[in-house]
Image: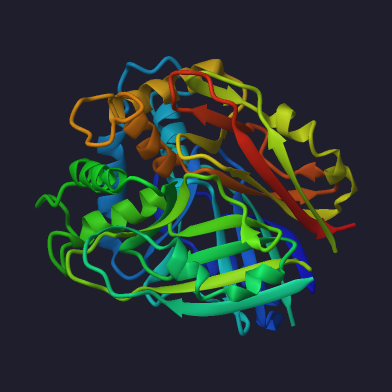
Length: 140
Length: 140
Length: 140
């Protein structure tokens, strides 16, 4: 049984939805030695999310962000607005999308679908640098 | 430590919410030998979801589907509509519900609540056959 | 490899969002011996959720609950209302937020962000006592 855990600092990004599959994979070359396993990718924040979705069309990421903004608008009715109008909406979007992914690894690669990619959803307007803990467990 | 991983092809289904606990369990008879463990069930798609919810009343599945359709209507305002009006709404519903479950296994069975069942939420109108990776880790 | 699994009964709570990090940790003193691992926290119910979110401001929990109530109102249009008007909305909120968390453990502690805490989101009006399965896997 192989067990690997490491912390990664993602690039700083302002509000938006970003495909980060390559950025994550470049930090965990060890998965090439895993024949069969799982990788958990955990974001240590409450104002950004991880999600798996379509990896080809940038329009999907734009539509997703617009939908979330419409669903959770930066209105004035929130009690919690210490860091601005985007503060509480960012927390809500985080709980709706989640901040952790558990993905199978097979023959040294993420065993995801052809169209699946890892999204970082940055919900705050101003750029933030986000920390991720990656944990890999599996057999060689 | 026991480690098992396999890919399953689910039955083809058109839009709707389906209880697939039995279909999944019939493909992993190996869990009867796991005394204590975890099973990860991972859907390799961006237009369908997995969720755990009420396993007795078909009305819950109907209400859930109607709610999701009302929350993410097949409107014209999406940029991404390459495969039709249900294309982008399917991606959004997938990110809201998620496409992966991690469930405890105890004494050879899924250790879920009395009322919990595994839902496949097919968000596309036309039938699709969906692939799932099941990974089991535990002790005997 | 260390593998621990146990069931926990949470305190009875009526509708609301509660920070339960300490209540969970008090039941799993074993994690202090895990150098590197994962903990899965699984709620065995379909009318309550687990989520990770902001651990300092009670306003966040109030805003989150109010948002969810607005998103999924206790209307009359649901077919499934056997246990009251809050029955079906509770199921929908459960699928939107999820009922399971997988969190890294490092050097004997949950490796979560400074502002992250474990939320129990009780969606039913009347108090319920909720069961959780905690599974820990890791190295010493």
